[in-house]
Image (cartoon, rainbow, N blue to C red; front, side, top):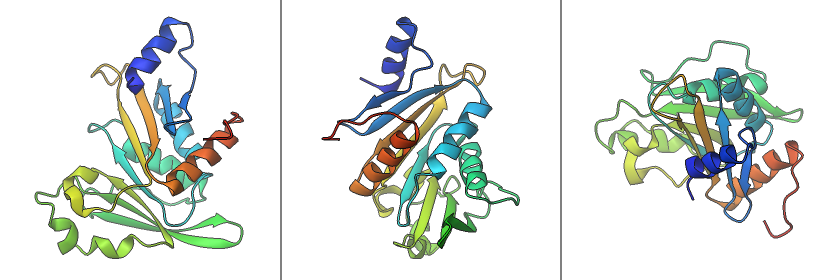
Length: 196
């Protein structure tokens, strides 16, 4: 069942503010009524990150991908400007991931790519390392040249209407992604089954 279907079913049962979790699939779904909720979830995710992660962000133009990233960066202590990397391709941030280490976080936006090969030509492969975190908007523009993500984050309009809120879906795609989601679940004080 899709995230939208699951949230619709929860709303029918007066559970519209419930966070829906499928522990076996390592998926989280939530309704975000406004920009503040988008920022909240970006900030929550920041506390779950670890070096080496690649997070791909999917969604329509204006759905909140950069807003989510901005909140994540703020939670990690970045106080400067956070701009969309649409024209510059990548923005680099050197951040404290915890009190003992600093991390290179790269925020990509491949929206302007016309060919998959532009990812290779731009030298993007060099950024995807075990000691960095890569957040990628519009990953489909790089096609199958982009490494598989650890997490897939989808933000999209509920009803093709920017005023109706957004759907957030986070799916773990690798063991590292599962570890990150488990940390997020723990922060939310939700119990996870032992086999998750």
